[in-house]
Length: 428
Image 1 (cartoon, one colour):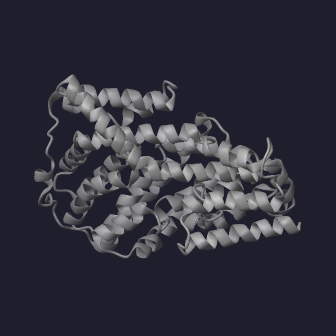
Image 2 (spheres, rainbow, N blue to C red; image 1 turned 120 degrees about the vertical axis):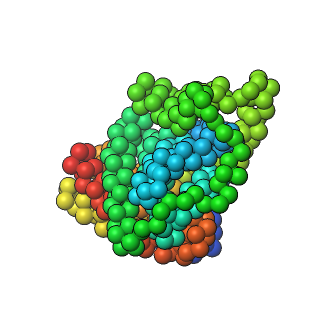
Image 3 (cartoon, rainbow, N blue to C red; image 1 turned 90 degrees about the vertical axis):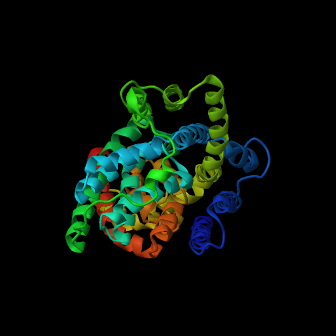
């Protein structure tokens, strides 16, 4: 029990260091993995040593997720470079005419569709620099515009297939099992976004007519017209259709998406090859932070699921893990905000290890653990003030990033609660 208590103390210390930004997450997770093994008494060398079973094996544990992230970022870069992203947003704004509410709703749908494919801060900046001025120009206050944009982003993130692959690896479940629950979360997130929009419109009395912000026309260098221009607009949903309906593997679906966009935007084979090369490098750069983070997640996952570590931690985890449907629902709803600041319910922080431990106990079905942690992820996705997308968006519209979190937290917490209840009823 002493070893288990010491490991929990180390968890808390590492979490505190991450929250206070004393140590970056990409270093904290491997450090925690090593510390857990040392305290539990896992040998250093040999076939069962943690250098082999945790460090080496952990580095490639999420390899399928790394590749999905790279190909998704590659497709996103091509969309940005060819003007597809900008054109989708511009055409969406034109559909709304001079009706602020209609423009906002169409912008939300456009952003959500785009981020089913796009990844990384570069894409947030690309989309945000177009969408946010449009929202502000129709009379939406800067803080409200930032929150609406981030909620739209969160809606699309539910359908981001690179994330599906990451979650499937963490929970050791199939893509189809992840996908089914994400359908529930996307519906809840979209409804919450609509509620946010109507509340903000009523509270702020939005009444200004729409007028496109200066510079939008000049920024759009590539006009996509005709049949090709129409077909290329479907690029973000092509991979989704292939995976969701035709059961095509994720990487293959992204490759088809890349081929699809090049067919309708490239004027010659050499130009297509140049575009492929340039965007490939940019896509890898864009996805590098996520990949490095996943290396640490893989190490932490294998660390806490090591038989020696499990034997040490099982008594503690057994004591705190919910054992009935009611306690499951209360436990995860109340503690859902612990997904913030890379906390114990954050799948891209300490949460990957906690989830693995809960699954290993066998008292909660893996699907129930998945549902609870993905529900909490809704709070982290756009509620965490340390997220790069939150920081950039708040800075762009000149509001405090913590103010954005305060405004979004009630909506995100309700989404998490809905997800936990549905997960409990379906899977517990």
